[in-house]
Length: 131
Image (cartoon, rainbow, N blue to C red; front, side, top):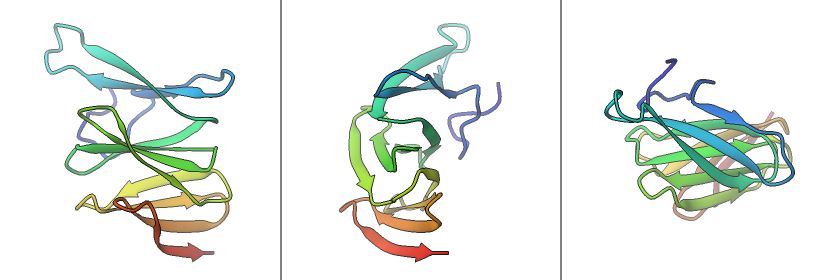
């Protein structure tokens, strides 16, 4: 396998998207704690209307976020698999995301040549930088 649940980036063996009519499912593979029983558990989460571009876990593993060509970011609670907050504000596809170590903010970049720092409590921009 090419990664672990604690890694900052998910590798292609853990994440793939299927081209189907909207919405597109992001299939995330989470390794089971016992590799001899159910070595991979597949989770399907539908939240985006276009291709998923990135999935990242927070540093403590309590959250993960998905970004998409649909210009949105969805932050999920890892244990409940419930959507915590949806971040909307880019005018182009979101290409990458990264959590701050304290889980209070998330940074995102987009093909619209912007980088946004988001407050995860309010869902608002803390800072937006244009190139």
